[in-house]
Length: 175
Image 1 (spheres, helix red, strand yellow):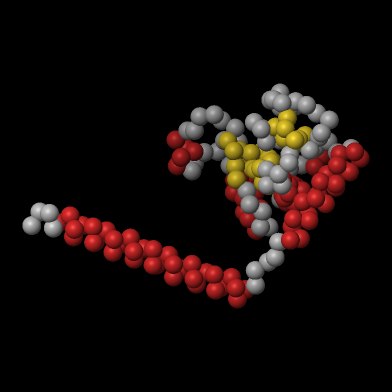
Image 2: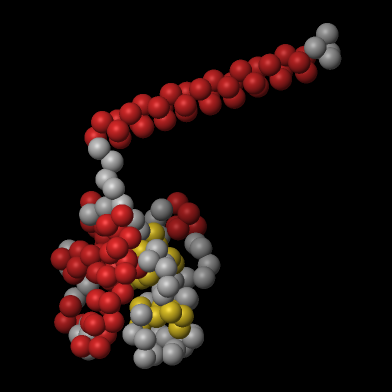
């Protein structure tokens, strides 16, 4: 499969240029390459983010507009964004978006047999990496959280004590 670096839209291997913007396509070689799963705005943005988060799929978004408005900074921007997911999670994310009604399957052209075979062959390569991943046990996860909290407290204490020591040292020059 190939991807447009500008649009983040996936294309089949036979295409050389993006059907939306006309840019040259690049072959996807990394399973974590961000690809666009859908284009949404407004409330649908929050629905898609929530659904993907519930499924454990990391996602970000890319704006279609080049300039950022004040509404975008304050969170009130309703302009279109492209939801990006890792390539390895594209199929699952696509199914979720169809399930919540953000993507209408009737508007999407069905894949050819060659494209389906290409996707399946690439999935087998990426699935081998997923099999190597081992889920952390609940007790180990709790231990890691406790140790992380303790380390965070120690870092905060170190910063506060260091600032106090530095200020006392500086005050020593003036008394």
